[in-house]
Image 1 (tube, rainbow, N blue to C red):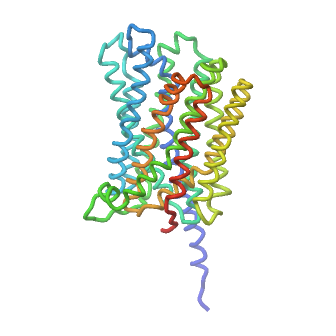
Image 2: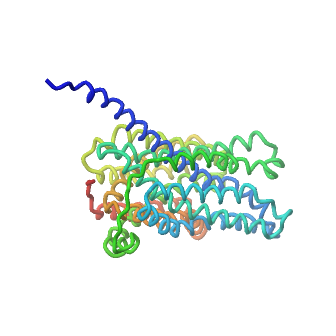
Image 3: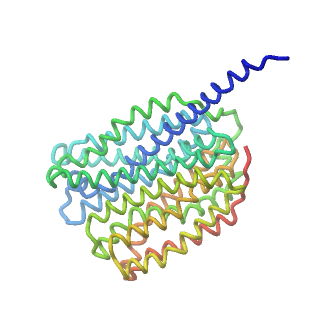
Length: 432
């Protein structure tokens, strides 16, 4: 009888190596993605202080508008980052693209964190800050496609939902850390110190952790070995998969509008329109980040991989969160308070986040592996830039024109219906 002891003895170490490799993939990809999103979004929390230091315009609103325009520049660069770095990930592998994105984000963050103020170096100061935002936007545009496809391809088919859920969890961590940094620094430092140097600390924190993420990403196992092809990934996506690409962009209209209005716009809306305390912005930011983290984890552990199809969860959670929007805003307008605002943010974002990982999987599984990173990066970056980056501006303009405090709800309804129609039409395939 054949001795099976050696075979049995090597099985456990092999499983342990696989588990360690998968854990390293999750940590490296999620931590790097969270760091990139943190560096990118923390700018918005300190926009007013950055405005005073780098944009000394005479008018009262001028510095803030220029700071917000600088924040918006990062969104304008996302589609270019999605095209260039997504294509790079399909041509040279996911690991190479992930290393590139974190390096670009580190350079951009360093330019913002370390540039002297306008009072010290003049016009070079805002120029450096704008260039830093351009690099951050370029990096963020390519990060989602490379990181999410890497997570998906690093696990077996039966665990794809669990793996991809870490992408959304990392965004929740980034939002939570960004809000906490603003709250803690505002409480710990006097206004003069916060304006002079305190606002730089979150950027320096991200910058110090960057080399760790860069080192880990350079030692990951590749999941995609590129092959020589006649067409570039970009050309193939635009010719062979154009209809699916456009449907993907339409699908993201609702989720990205929900994210940027409920997470980034709502706190300011509550302060300006409902006259709630300024601390509301940090509390709502912490609540939304924690909700995204918990909901994504729950979906990855208990829901996504147990379902035979992706689309029902995506459609169901999108529809459910949309049904809550109008009652939620009516309740907030009737009983404006911080507890009510937090409950609304938790409810709506919780429902939306439960289906987000399946949303990413539905899109990625709709494209062949050799163009997957390019397709997802283009869909995400174009959708977020056009419909997410401008959501706050659009709602503010409509609210000013109509005077209707329910404007954010109506905007979310329209965006949500567009997404539901696109989800219904998007072809589902679960292979590889």
